[in-house]
Image (tube, rainbow, N blue to C red; front, side):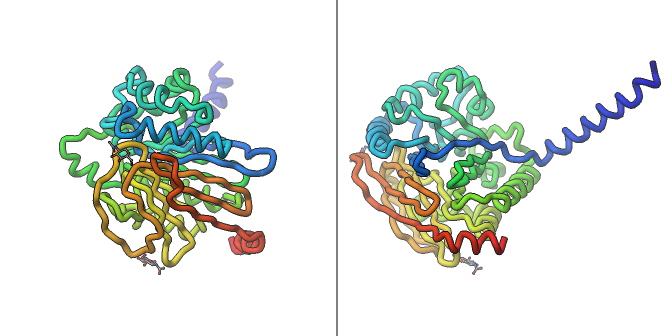
Length: 335
Ligand SMILES: *[C@@H]1O[C@H](CO)[C@@H](O)[C@H](O)[C@H]1NC(C)=O
Ligand SMILES: *[C@@H]1O[C@H](CO)[C@@H](O)[C@H](O)[C@H]1NC(C)=O
């Protein structure tokens, strides 16, 4: 009896060690969303929205519905601050229906939503917002801390940026942040950046887009997020990321990096806006709208077309990026 138990015990022990060690730097979870049969993909990005329809959230939602219809969108991205002021209180919080299900009712928005958490979401029960129970209530909902969406023509890397911001840990000023499964901060950030770096180096998609709630560059109220400029930006530059897309500042922005190809895009106009702040930074401001709105993206492996809209659905700014097949192969050759 004892003799046959020993190898079995050893096996389960090594399995346990293996499970534990892979857990300390877990590979980022991956999802797949196929492009349309013509090889294109279109989507909408909205951030900073959940206010039970108030502050023009419902008007923006209606315009998103129309644009979504026109572009035949494949999915929606939420750049975080999904539920104001303090995230969700639990999986049974009525705010989930009042700020999400009952607001984004247009037919074209009945698609998969891919969401990250914002700092306001961290002030509630984060585990509830990440819980699969919400998918039973509204199957569109998918929110994770950090994950990857492969679409063949582009890889979208979603990054949990709130834990980077030191003041949320050191001077929460009466706000409570739910750091369960995150603390300690340093280890969490180290693991995340390493996983992201590996995943970016591994990516063979023509386009690489990174989405996080917090700004890297912004001229509005919150400005640049220094922790991300120091820790995240070098990894994005090193790996040839094309776009960094964020919310956090309640406005629409397009800023170009002066010494890399990165474009910084803010789509944080999902509800309350009009902050009246403007502070330029070192990078090159292309567009700034201090009001409500959202952003659309249409892409193929060769081009990306981005448009910013206001509450009336007017196009305020457009940008087009092209990827030459030649430079794409050059990039792979160097990597
Ligand atoms: C709603 O949008 C309109 C048009 O931009 C703006 O004039 C109005 O102030 C907005 N309302 C709120 C509460 O922000
Ligand atoms: C790139 O520009 C930023 C300012 O936008 C500066 O802080 C950084 O040092 C520059 N990096 C290089 C490699 O020149």
